Image 1: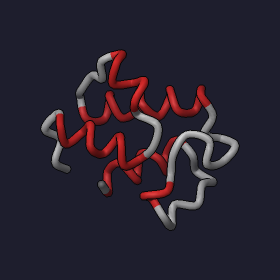
Image 2 (image 1 turned 90 degrees about the vertical axis):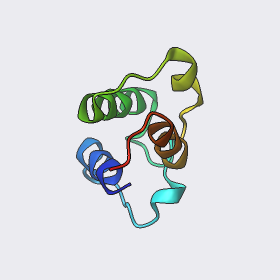
Image 3 (image 1 turned 90 degrees about the horizontal axis):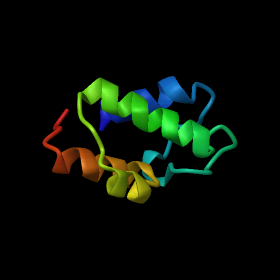
Image 4 (image 1 turned 180 degrees about the vertical axis):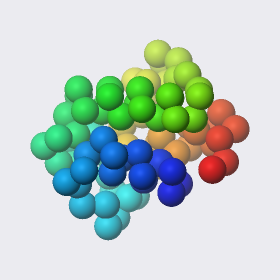
Length: 76
């Protein structure tokens, strides 16, 4: 999950990441729909994976994204 938190920090440099389990779409102004889309693109690039359109619709917070990564075999 550390890589994922680092990517969130990279996408949203001014975000408070003290409680990553509570982070998700809309939790601060920068994490709007465009910021969310850009974060998911960054995650796909970093981990060399692709989310299916159905998956994208369900990935609303950090725990959901983390679980999707685990499902795709990403363990780092």
